[in-house]
Length: 474
Image 1 (cartoon, one colour):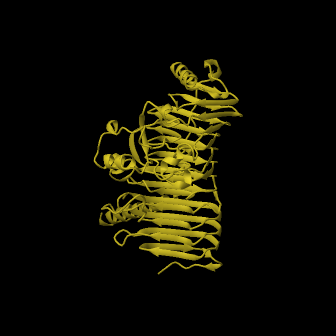
Image 2 (spheres, helix red, strand yellow; image 1 turned 120 degrees about the horizontal axis):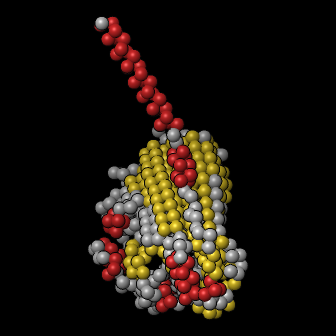
Image 3 (cartoon, one colour; image 1 turned 135 degrees about the vertical axis):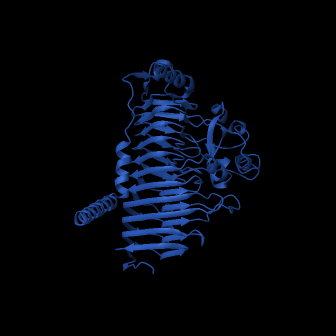
């Protein structure tokens, strides 16, 4: 009996060991990129009823002069009330105020169609629940807006023209390069953006954060808030007042084949915020600010909302001008997790960085998992990878919320001119930047390979900078 018992114990132990080894092997074989594929496979473009509503049937005039706000509104309303479908914008030029999408609506622009959005601020009343630099408020309606809707889209081959410039919207930023002159009002005045910041810090209800006329906070271009199944495809967006594509608190977002050309202030190309399961693919960004900037709320407001941005995929995109190619922050107080970038090109003397993470001790927040592969970089000004925990803008940004950043991987990256630094990274002694990996990275020319402060576990594999094989720091 003792021999039998001993035999059974040995068999059980070996069986457990074998199963444990198989589990470890399975976990090891499942890579971050397997997760990216799972996310992408789950993202399916919304389907709309087979019904077409033509805005011309609602009195729209394609003359570029007549204000067609009522025609857009009535076409969308009737289409939605009868179950949804395609609201068709035929070839021609259509002036309008803001367009509000409803459930199951696909706003489709035929080739040769252009929507001109009014540059008159009062046309963007009534005020709606919107967002400005990571802070929610009641403000001018975004140019294209949806609030708590499902199954919405803007598609086609046409142009969305915000008509912003140095004579409209842009001077409000308070910079002379965008038409502002001394003595003119701007967002920086005490009753405008600083007041909104104070309201957010003090937890004033959003319904009581009333701005609009006289406060000079510009509207976003395309902004779905708290929406599910959002689809933006094919269109070209030009001359935006502010952030261009800003899905906030959204789930399942597909942005495919969109071109953004807008060089105004804060003209970020695409800013997913508090959003989950987002893919940005086959797009071109030529912008006055970050090409793509993943956000998650600002300071106390972001921590109060507490919705991290996660599962964001960027693939097959072309970044031209911009402050950064793919950026996280600076509004990231609720945290960002699982960002994947692959098969992109980045190249311009006016592109400052390729991959950038920016936060500070007022923002706080965390970044965990930024995976980049198969990227061709022609030229950037400052750095291939910049990670900065001391980012500052507007005023003193020192606080008590020390951020954490970890698990950044760049693989199979070819760079012709990296500017000043291959990696420029600055962390805190009490919260170092952890686990940066360069694998098969080639930077043909750069002033300095690295500038590192409080970086822990930098791993360099088959990485060449200025023709030299780099060794991981000890």
